[in-house]
Length: 285
Length: 209
Image (tube, rainbow over all chains, first blue to last red; front, side, top):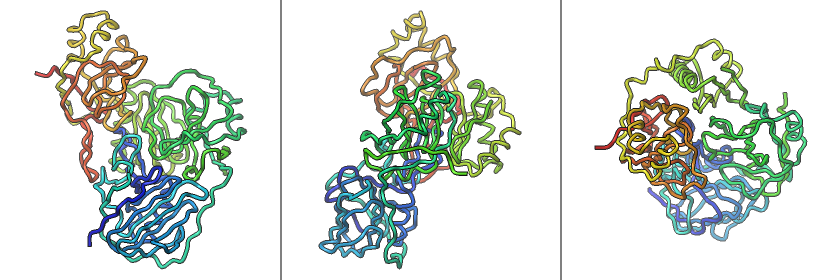
């Protein structure tokens, strides 16, 4: 039975996301995909979908939507109020949704983002095998607006027999493991010490492309730009103003500012609100 | 060439010159096809080749150290030469002519007579940086980028020529336009590249009839 998802309230920034479209960076195509891929995979498993199915990623203010057919919905990620009609639900628990019922995800109480999976998955036309919205290049469906409707796929399996899953709290301070390179030699040793000693503050300017930090500017030993080179997820780029930027899922495929180091795991940044303290430490060995 | 570390799952081959980049790109793509190298992404840049999605970077670095790049002019591009029909009416042609110290017809003759090669892609899906112009002909970008450059615009910046696959802001000097579709991604991952101009492709910017 075909169904549709009607977006009643799109919220601040709600996009369709799956596990992204890796493998095309040599053509200038970013990986994109959910900012916390494991959280979206969990939401998919909770409603009986394949992990690669597409769901929604909401930002800070949640969303409201209606299913035109009965199905299951699961919300993962930030702590938020979840309701099916008047019935309260929980983040991290599969919810049975009657046809026509309204699902509401409230504003994040802590953290920033939620992932919402619907049984059958969101079946918009893929691009290069992925339904993810790439906010940098515009590939995939545009960010959702109030009144949009999205096609749903056929349910693949039953919702998972699970009561509740344990979410990850959003810490007031984020500690990120960083490996130096490839361009740490563009900085003198004092700058690298500063990088590991500074309590940075997450700037409100961040988005799906990158998380901007403010703090002690990193002085560079080499001025200017370097010839464009490939960029990876988690790369910490230092532009001319010396304020580091950590690249996230929609990062450009090449860039000309030196990358001082690479963060092992950026998924914590998906829930980090502006103002969060960010510290770097060396990788544990 | 020097191998630089990039996080837990990547490596950067820092090359001596653009020809070596092309040689390593071709060598690594070949090694991956042959099953000798595991990498999700092999991304050439202006002076580098990035390997990303590498399960064991230390082992990959040891493998790479035992290989040699192919000579760039001997790289087999399967006879791929793309002729891009260009209408040379770009509004920055006089600016380019002034930088080069020649008249506009000479600029057009130089561009149509150059055998370009896609050095790397970036900036936008399907945007190819074309090398082939002498370094002495490098031109600066606009001090203030245009808010909107139409799709198909053929332009120059630094030592590169490029073609905007879609409309976007841009600071390159516009020399012409083409109706050729450069990036048309299908729904499912294709067997053939979804971009017309891929790294290594030979390109001519021919005058449109």
